[in-house]
Length: 472
Image 1 (tube, rainbow, N blue to C red):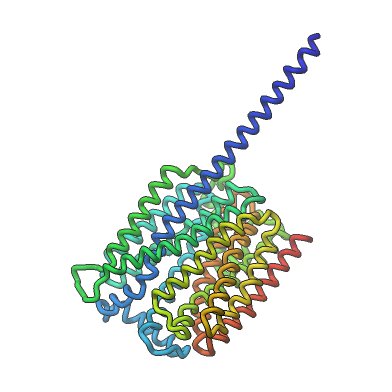
Image 2 (cartoon, rainbow, N blue to C red):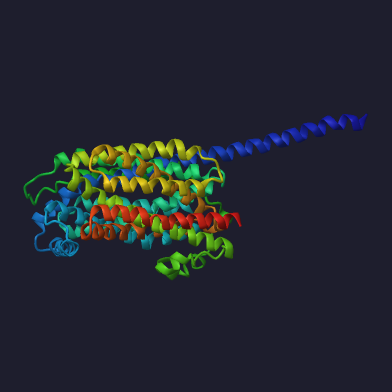
């Protein structure tokens, strides 16, 4: 009787234990969902502040052309005009402005290239939360400097501070890696992509609103872009408070690197381009994994090098061939942004685990005819058909390659590998616009786009090679 009475007792105890496990799993899932939401909203706020400046850049450069005629602006403008003459671009102020904006964008990306792996490594030591907050404080300070930048050298200083500090994107990908499993990681990366797409629609609209307050006359007592800079600074401060209050550390204490020396002693590997392409700072990778990561990293670099260049030259093409005004180009980028939001919010999030490489290669394959159609377009129907393919392809490649990279490396090195990955992308974005611009004006728009589309075969084949490595 005692034995028979013990059986229900043991069964009840087992049921209770299973219930506790299920509750713990639900708690982990709830914490992960909260972290993803916080990262999404924080990144969205940050990127809206960041993109607010985009439609203001022509007016900002025009302002400094009138107020800084003997300083840094005039010196850099001379170099821009030399480059324009070298590649054969038309001698117009509009193209000077676009080239100057590209120069500042390349400077920002080069700074990201150096800082991203360092910031990622620091987050492996001290955790994501403190390094994320420190990065956001630097970004807020850069906007504060911009708000008082009546002199062009101060404006460049603001961009330098922002470029060095902007490590929150690579940290966001590391956080997604912390809280997601390999099965749903691509969905987490898609959330980051959606934040980018929404911000690149909303931010420029806010910038266009602030452009109404710019002045056309030189007034030493009024900096016409102070309102926009203050708006961005306020958003950055709100973002800091939001993260401070709602974001909880996602890197477990037992997964942290316990000494700064062990994480940053090989600083040379984190800033030397050759070492970055070799992923030399990643000590936990086995030989087979290291080869695959190198293939993924280099294919990502080549893809972004070509993509960013063609993206940058799109402004030249639509203005030269279709006589698009700034407003019409804004509508074009709105069209691109909406398709990318739908692609990442619907298609990418629904792709099952295990199809990351296949989907990334499909994205590049779709992007190639889109680029050819854009380059050959003589009418708006073909142009926007190409832009639709361009947007769909662009919305799939980066999230899935990011998800694949994040699956490698030990838990204690996730920040470092995502920082290196982000750094390679920044280097590509720094070099791509200048390369595409030189080809565009030295040869032709068709040569630029057809050549770029054909060269996309290289990262396409490299991703196929990485796929075969995975099968082996």
